[in-house]
Length: 168
Ligand SMILES: [Cu+2]
Image 1 (tube, rainbow, N blue to C red):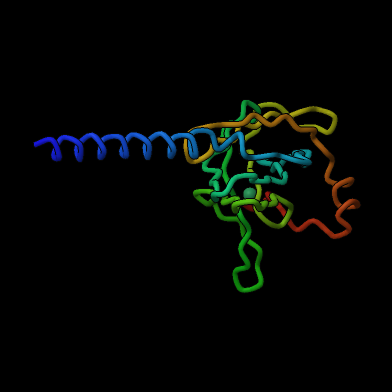
Image 2: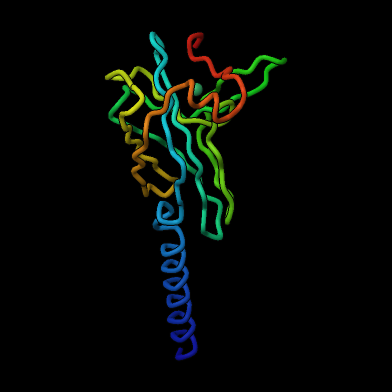
């Protein structure tokens, strides 16, 4: 009888410790993500959408998934990637961007990006744009970034910009 009680207590304690430590590990993924060099591309005239780019660094021991982006500046924000479909670069919506443990994921022209669809106001160079990033555990991070013109960006990257949003 005594032995049985001890076992039960022990099991309960173990269960509690496990629950606590996993809560601590996963409670705030946003705190483990560092955002650097964020910017939004200036909306080309007549374009229905533009895109935000940044580098996401993960300082934790676990891969973290960015599952959602939201903003006040456009009606919709989607996570997009580019795929090479028989030599044609095409954009696809993806359910998440994964940032590896102690690694980084780059959102950049021609690759992963946050698509801002149907801007509510013109997104022009010199303005700032705020995007809220939500991670798998529900924690979130607000990123405020400058809007940069397409021309400056092309010169900085030294390649032509094939990231056209005119033909969605
Ligand atoms: Cu896109």
